[in-house]
Length: 226
Image (cartoon, rainbow, N blue to C red; front, side):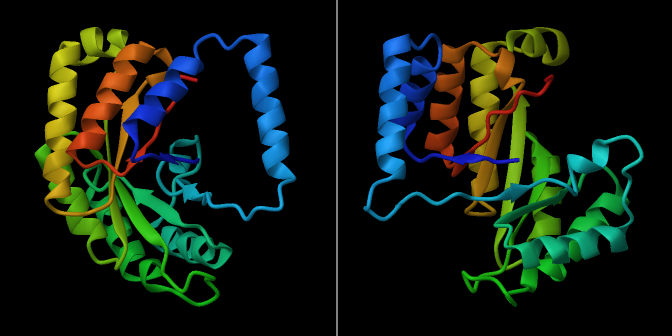
């Protein structure tokens, strides 16, 4: 899974607006621009960040339950492969998951052998947008020199109304305040508006701008229900 890093909310806004109904002419212009850039002699300045969630989202696949030692071994291989960010688990979910994320942070999160950057893999943990989850996540990932908290809250109207029972305004309030709380513990914060694929684009922009302002350094837009 790839998470798009963004620190410029206007750019994010423009991207989401243009993604609604691009014209044929606009698509042609984008193709020409992409082609010109691909064959340009100028050095690339963007960095592709590889975010691997095998140990967290991957484990939700039927029959894919992993033991703590298996997670540690897979994480070591991900480090050897050059993965930038390893989402090691959901620490609040169980004692076993907390222990596994902690061990990955203490082992694979320390490795630098074979890594071009000379830096260890960043270890991330998933947490719902509440203080208890965020604190538990921090306790697990903090053992890695580079670590991240990935937090989320639903953003589609159907989830807000029928699952959470909150308004859009309350969604923005909770999301931004919990990102700010997470920021008090770590510098690297990822935020996901759950069910982004069915969320209103204008509200999605508003929400993402709010969490970026609160301290989010990575925005992930998941198509939660496929």
